[in-house]
Length: 113
Length: 110
Image (cartoon, each protein chain N blue to C red):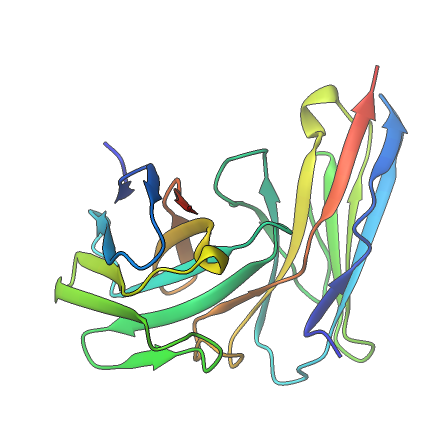
């Protein structure tokens, strides 16, 4: 079983639509959870941390369900600039020690005008 | 000012060669890392290192060795390069929850 699993897509979504991604993780001892964004041929950049209580940053909402080991990301009113690969990331205790990040393979999002 | 800088940005080399990639961070972070992103875009940790402990992902061949002259630098040395080593290598650093990636080194082995 992969440690962090996500649907690779691509998701083709019209501009202005709402789109949701999710991922599951296998290590119940994981401590921290994130969504990263990676543009083509660039480094991954932190989009937002994910908390059990849910958290929102502008048009982006993230949610963590520890019992189901499930993480979600919702993007409202999508913009052309949201086109990227979204990486579900779990931190801790997986090949790289307590601080190493374990990445999902990413979900490719394409916003269409 | 670049927070995590890697050199070179691109590296093309022949099979069997030995090469190094350099990484420097000016953030005062205490832990540095190397990640590999293969042709399928899968990002995977190779090493994490602070001045006390080196943690190696067991899947990394021993041809790869990190070298840290000081807290601000973590270089990656690769011996006897193979075609399968072609990938983008990202350096990163962290302190607490903050985590910053370099812009990557695209290695092509021919």
